[in-house]
Image (cartoon, rainbow, N blue to C red; front, top):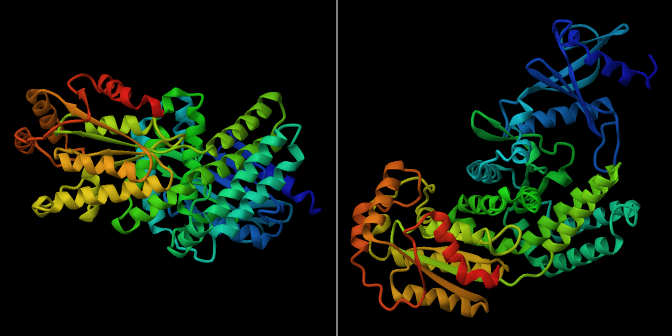
Length: 523
C-alpha cells in the first residue's frame, strides 16, 4: 500500500461499524478537525491524529502520534478520568486493519473515550439559553481546584514567553489583514499588548517565580466543558504543546472569562456570568495566594485580549463566508475594548444579616469594572479562608472570638487595596455596623485615588428574621449568622449613617436597582 493511500484507507476502515464490532446498520459519526479525525461508535469515541506537521504541533511520525495519544489520555484524566479511557493500537495484517488484539503491525494509535451527549456541552447550553449561573460558578471552582493541583512549571511563562505569544499572533494575522481583519486595529492591539507586557514585566516574572505558571488546560472555554451527572467536566486539554499548556493559571482562566464575556455582548442572559466565574475562582484561593492573585489581576485585560486575538486569527484564517469574516472582526474589536484603560471604583455594601448584602454586591460587581466585572470581597468568605475552610463549611466558635472581626476587616481592606492597585474595581460586602469600619472603607478609596460609594441596606426586623431563618434552613450560604446573631445585631448602635440608605425589604431585583442608582456614574 502506498504511504499516501494509507491514511485514506484507515479513515475508510474506521468509518465502518465492523471496526468496532458493531452491527452493520450502526451509524458511525465522523468529525474532522485540522489535526484529527474523531469517530463516534456506539458508546465510545475514537480519536485518530492526522499525519500533519504545523509550527505548533507535529504528528508526522508514528512515534509522535503514539506519544501524543498517551499524553492526551494522561493529561485529560486530570479533569475527566471517566471520559478518557486508554490508547488503542491500530494494526494492519495484509490489506486489512483491526483495532487492538494480537497479530499484525501497528500502523497508528487512537485515543478511546467514553461518549457523552453533545447537548450537554456548556457552549451548546449557553446557545440554547439553558446554562445556569450556578453551573458557571461550579465550573470556576473546578478550574480553581485543578489549578491548585497542576504541576508547577518554573521554566515556562514570564514576560519574554508571553511576548512570544503576542508576537506570534501578530505574525499569524498578517495574511488576513486588510481582507478579513482590520490592519490598523490589529496593529493597535499588538502595540498596546507589547506596552502592557513591558509595564508588567516584573509582575509576569514574579508570578513565574511564585509558582503561578503551571501545566494548565490550555484551551479552557465552554466548548470544552460538558455536563455529566449534573456537574461540569473539563476535557480536551492541550496535549501537543508544552508552550501552549504551561502557562500562568490566570491566563488559563482568561480563556473561559473571554469566551463568556464575548458571548454576553450579544446575549444578555450571560451578562453576569464572567464576573461570577472570576469571583468563584478567586474565592477558592487559599490564604497564602489570595493577595498575590489580586496583584495578578493587573494582567487580566492583557490575558483576556490575547485570548481573543487567538480566537480572531483562527476564525479569520478559516473564514469562508462573510458571516465568518464579520465574526473574526468582532473578536478583534472586543480585544481592543478589553485593552481600553478604565478607572477603578470602590463600592462598599453594608447592612445587618438578611438585608441581602451579598446578592446586591454580586449584582453590582457584574456591572462595574469592564468585561470581567469587579472583584467581590465578602467578609464571610474571607473569614473562612483565614481559618482554612471552604465557603460552605461552618466555622468553630473561636473564629468569632473578640478581635477576629477586626482582623477580617483588615484582611478585606488589604485585598481590596491590592485589587485597586491592579486597576480593578471592587465591591466589598460586610456588615459595616461600626462608623470606624465605614470610615476605613472610604479612606481606602481616597488613598488609591478612586471614587467611593457606600450603600447601607435596611429592612424591618421581621423581614430580616424570616430571611435569615430560611437561609439557615437551606444551609447553602457562606454566612454562619443565624437568627440569634441577627437579634444581637438589631441592638447595634450604628452611629451616624452617611452612606446611601436603600430599602432592602423588596425583591432582590428591586433592591439591586435601588442600589445601582448611586453608582450609575461609574458603569
